[in-house]
Length: 329
Image 1 (cartoon, rainbow, N blue to C red):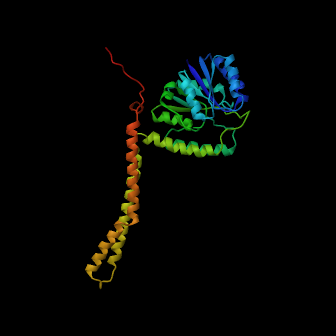
Image 2: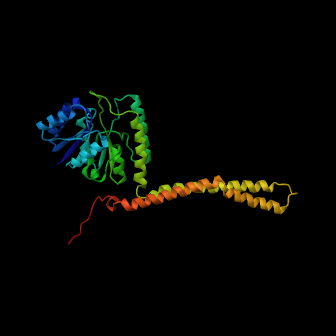
Image 3: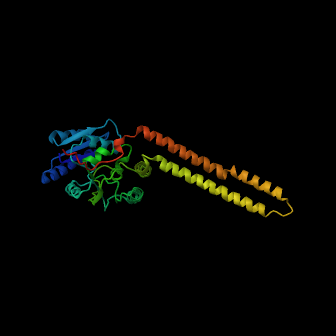
């Protein structure tokens, strides 16, 4: 099969039939061999009844219904597991993504890209959604090195092998290009038209931004240090210990300088005793002890993390093979 469309949805009954007509028009015009998979993420309206009606009239349409709302990442993963196409395109069911963009996505893939992400260059959203989104996209691009203008765009195209290697949970769906890039796949983007919402309302609020930044930290850590956590935690520990040693040296120098300024009437022996005592007190001061203990704690945590990784990691996930030269007789 050439193409699979995976469409997650939650309470979108009003838009599904129009989306069906638009997809069919594009598929018929380009003679695509495709399947369309609707994933109903626990809708409480008549979305599933509409999907059943569409699927009964068009064998290219399939449906997956969740028992409750599990989130977009789970819906996409269910769709990816069911998809059979060589290419998989995701789009939202709210009609803001235009199916007419599908041919351009496939043409972009022909240039050698493995992932093509949509970029809603001109958005029909209120400013309080656009501004935080731009901050988030800039942060993701900076921290991960995957330079995209719109990581949150729901319309993306993937090669089948990318989705076979990337697993989704939580809210990691917006980071699929990042996860793919970390495994060596080529990621690009294309400008797409963004249409204003015709039915219903957005399912996301301000909390999405906060969760997105927390997920960004998780993905950044996993893609860089997921198989070597001691390199991250141990580095922090060594830096904290080094700061403690510097603090101790500064305090010791200060004590030495202070005792050197004592009047000469005080005996040399008494002065030496005080200097030695000062150094001992400095050694057990919180300026040194606290950083050392914290640093050792980070190192110990890194060792425990390495132990967990060594017991749970699968060797076939440590790399991604692009080509193989088979043995010749």
